[in-house]
Structure formats: C-alpha cells, structure tokens
Amino acid sequence: TVMPVCNLRFSPPFRRARGVVGASGSFSAPLSGLGRMSLGYNYVDLFEGATVHLFDLCRYFLGDASLVHARGLGRGAARHPYPCRQAMVGLDFEGGSMAQVFTSSNALSLKPWLRVEVHGDGSWLVVDDVLELVVYDSETGPAKSWRPVMASTLVFDEEFGGYMPQLEHFLQVVRGQEQPSVVAADGFKALEIVVATHLSLARGEAVRLPLVPGEADAELAGLRLGWAQGPNMPPGAPGQMTKG
Image (cartoon, rainbow, N blue to C red; front, side, top):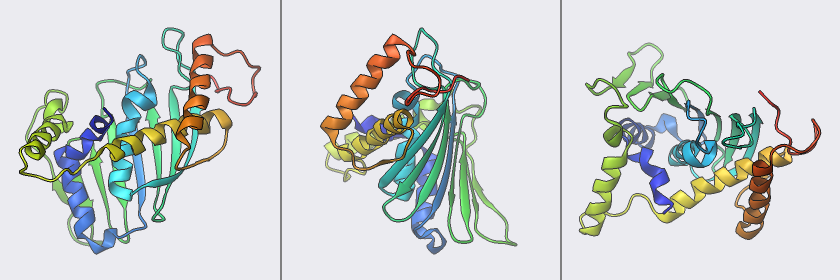
C-alpha cells in the first residue's frame, strides 16, 4: 500500500534523468536538488496526496533523508482543514546532498505543475512538467534534451505519470523476468518525510530522521484532531500556521 507513491520514478523523463545522474561523474554526491509541485487541488491533503511523490523523487536522486525543516503559509478552508496551503521544505541527506521543495495546493490546475532540478559539479539537469528532460553538462557545448511527441501530459497521465510502467514492472517481477526496482521501504521513507514535514511545521523547528514510528504517529494524530477542530490558538502560538 506504500509503494504506489513511487510512481514518478517510472515516468520516462525521470527514468532517463536518473540514468544521466548514475552515468556521469559530474553528478557524484553530494548534489543539490530543487523541486516545485504547484497544484490547484485544494481538496486533497497537500503532503500525503501530492508532495509525497516529489519527496520520493528527492530520495530517488539524492538518497535517504536525514533532516526535514518545513515552513507553511495559509490554512486550508473549513471544508478541507489542513495546516497549510503552501510550504517550503528543506531536506538534508545522509550522503551530504541537500534539497529545497516548494509545494502548493492553491496554484493553477492546468498550467505547468512539476519541476525538478538536480545540480552536480559543473553539470545540472531539469525535468519540466513530467514531459521534458534537459541536461546542461558543458560550458560551451549544446544542451541535451529529450521530449516525447504528445499533446498534453494530462492526456497521457497513466503513461507519463509512471503508472503504466510501474504496473508493467510489477507484472514482470511477478513473472520472474525482472528484479524489483522499488520496495516497500521506499514508499515508507517517502511517507516518513511527509510525517516529519507535519511535525516540523507544528514545532517550528527541524526534525531529524528516522522518526520513532509510535511517537510520531501519536503526535500526528493529535495534530489532525486540531485541524478538524479549527484554529484555536492566539496568533504566534506554537504550531499556529500563518494565514495566507
């Protein structure tokens, strides 16, 4: 039940980008990452329902996270209480890499919504909107790009969102033709970043990973109860989100 959060690993431009990172010495760790996920779906849980995919991509390129520091703006509407509608999440990784993630649930739904950059030593690459990969690896040479011939990523979300390749890979594993490229621990660790993001927002401080599952779950359950009841603390109190 946790592995589906890893579907973007199977998206063609991200798989190609991971191949570039793995094959080029200029992308040796430590690396820096930038991610943006701008959605207009204010009826979903921003971290659990959307950003968890971006957190998993950060792990896909940069390894296991060791520290999460999040800040948020804007409380969700009454019909869908949530601690924020926009957030900046800083991630440190065990290998020394770092990343900054921006995520939003009050952006525009039908405009470019996802961007991931990976910066190495004298090289960097970017994947835009689950559609185009561009690699910049020379000061004077040309950029290298890959882009499919298609009308819209929304029309082919099953394929370019990674869902169909993920299902095909799962079936090949069942048939004994391939080894699993994603395991349950991958999904668990992406969700762990989601929980740490909530805790960081509420505490107003950085949260180290790994979490203690029972303690983190209990703290998050208390936070969720508070969201359902609505804001009841004076401005500036610990855990109170700034209204945007």
